[in-house]
Amino acid sequence: MSNFDLSVLFFLQLAFILGICRIVGALFARMGQSQVVSEMIAGVIMGPSLMGAFFPSAQAYMFPKASNTILFAVAQIGLAVYMFTIGLEFDVNLIKSRMKSALSISAAGIIAPFFLGGVIALYLYGRPEFFAPSASSTEVILFMGASMSITAFPMLARIIYERGLAGTSLGTLALAAGSLDDAAAWCVLAIVLASFTDTPAFAATAIGGGVAYVLVVMLLGRPLLARLGKIVEREGRMSNGMLAVVLSLVMLGAWFTDYIHIYAVFGAFIMGIAMPRGLFAREVERLVGPMTTTFLLPLFFVYSGLNTKIGLVNTPALWLLVGAVIFAATLGKGFACWAAARLNGESNSDALAIGTLMNARGLMELIILNIGLERGIITPTLFTIMVLMAIVTTLMATPIFERVYRRVPHAAGAVPGTVPDALL
Image 1 (cartoon, helix red, strand yellow):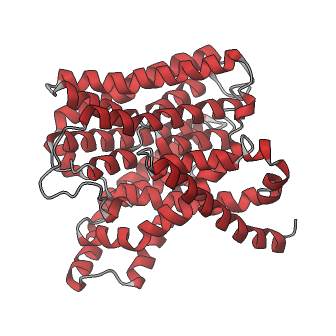
Image 2: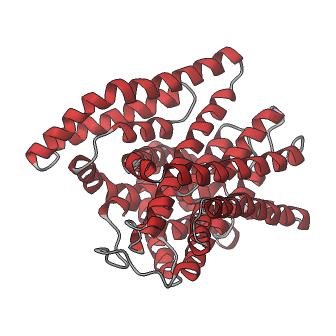
């Protein structure tokens, strides 16, 4: 197809993707599921697993391989801006208020699934249907450990705020543990990706560059960025010119971390953490949040869905492996976080709620898996198995949380069923 044909098709793809995501979202909303879950499933529906199986001609026309480059490029923009907003929501004060418990739960939620992911990686290592032949045992252990350790912090935060629990002990602890978990997992992933290079010197450059980027942005950039926050506070709004500056910085950070072979979203996430809070953060969310989550992110779910081929899981042994991965993920994340919360004196219902929320993977997991597939670490078969795990653990979160915590009263001042603009 010519570039003109691809550009014309792209607009049709956008309309189709947004329409399917909204339809699936409406159906799953009736079951109490979030838009994130429905978009994950919508992506699989539009891929070769379902649409390609039942309507192969239509799927081939709507998503030709030549169009994948465009989808990937636009999806990366959406991911970078989205991870920037996640960094913008990273509240250090939450962590300070529940430091001991949050650290314990976060550590348990990383160490246990990382260990179990490493065990699974060792079991599968050397089998070309799961990992690239060039991948070393250390690489596959690190990648599987990191991918099993991630938490869907945006979904966790959305559930907490929707249920009016943001000001409660449970809400504060869950948000603090989830944000710590996510930040730590992304740092681990950055180190893991930096190590997947041809030479130790190149890996050292990538890791050193990542550390330098964090130090420069946090120690030098943050005080300078604070001036932007004061300007917004003084004027009462964010101008278009300032928004352009902010987005330019996000793209610059994303470019640098991608350039040093870590990943673009890491640079955007750190840039978000360095930005001012208060009105500045609320204005950024107001201006870019809806466009990012409603328009750009669905493209990433579809891109992931195009790489998810359930037909590759075609033997009882592979389906048994899917079950084992889901069990290990739930045991390592949900049970470990529950146990850590109980050891820190939390009630059983609060501990169960925290374990359930921390066990959801959602969009964060898909980002990691796409990185692994793009970098040639994992095969489409293992990618599909891990996507199924991400969908199942994310689907579990809302109904189990509702069952465990349905009798908890809403926090004072919160309106049930509403979500702050920052999380839409």
